[in-house]
Picture: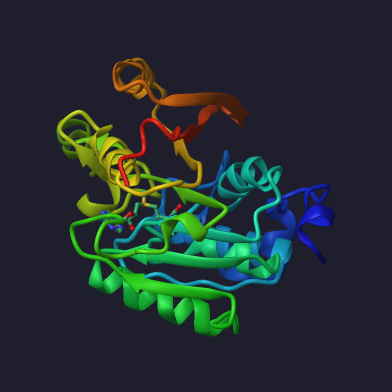
Length: 263
Ligand SMILES: C[S@@+](CC[C@H](N)C(=O)[O-])C[C@H]1O[C@@H](n2cnc3c(N)ncnc32)[C@H](O)[C@@H]1O
């Protein structure tokens, strides 16, 4: 199945069907449905969704961010409209979820990750799905692009689901009933939260003819500050909002113009 035919396929798996595929999920059923605030239940359910939807498998080390498959797919659907063939992902995470989905669609991906354990886990998820030919994983250091990806301009686009919590918010929510929550480096984007995104863009500006960068905001409260900064720094950007269940996602595309690129 190619990427364009996948665009019409619906992501999801009714809980009833998930329970038939993996009866262990029953341990997490409550009166009002599956306890998705429980990390194990959330992981198991999303593993089943991914298998059902794209015949892909993933696992995670304990304590790492659990990706919600259909929300990642909604983000990818958005970027797939530009029909990329060669994508650079920044911060692929322990799941390597965006890279795996793109790889399954026959798209070439280079994906970076800074955290050692997450990097090893991403490698194992790529191998597990026999996608080594489509996905190259790059262990990064503090820098996001500079001294790491010299060939940035050869990619059709840059993709990122950035860490974007501020430190205080993260500390307040880390013990809350949010099954997806990962560790500090996965979640915290800086003191305000948007610093990671701004660093990525300022590194991108140092390349000549850089491709557009696509990233998503999962915390809409960050929108005014982020857009204020993007305007201040005269970035050319567009934003698309998407309601996924009860949550709002904002998809950004930033294109660095010839004048702004310093490379
Ligand atoms: C919000 S998570 C997204 C993970 C995955 N892409 C997903 O959508 O579930 C952000 C990821 O960026 C990684 N990260 C943080 N700083 C980084 C850097 N300087 N270079 C590469 N990855 C980084 C984190 O370790 C984390 O895995």
